[in-house]
Length: 87
Image 1 (cartoon, rainbow, N blue to C red):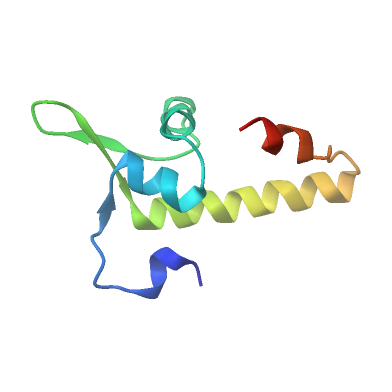
Image 2 (image 1 turned 180 degrees about the horizontal axis):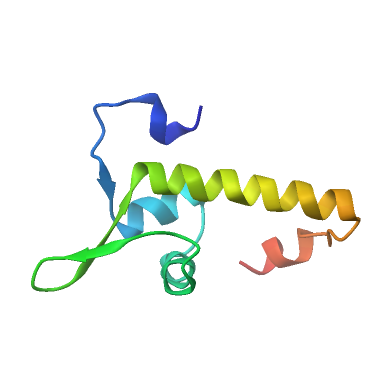
């Protein structure tokens, strides 16, 4: 199981920063995933702060694994080494 599901005492909802940390990406990428609908989220409070459910993050990760497996099977997977080096 993923880090998020190991401790059920953790908060049910995460901030953009927490999700970015979990996925080891920038917050702007998490915002992009939300904008495109790839990652479910909602806004709360007068300042419209984003919250993402722990299960929604796990679902996103599962979908990413599935998409990657499909790309590998199709022989359509490019080497991500260069993209990772640019981050």
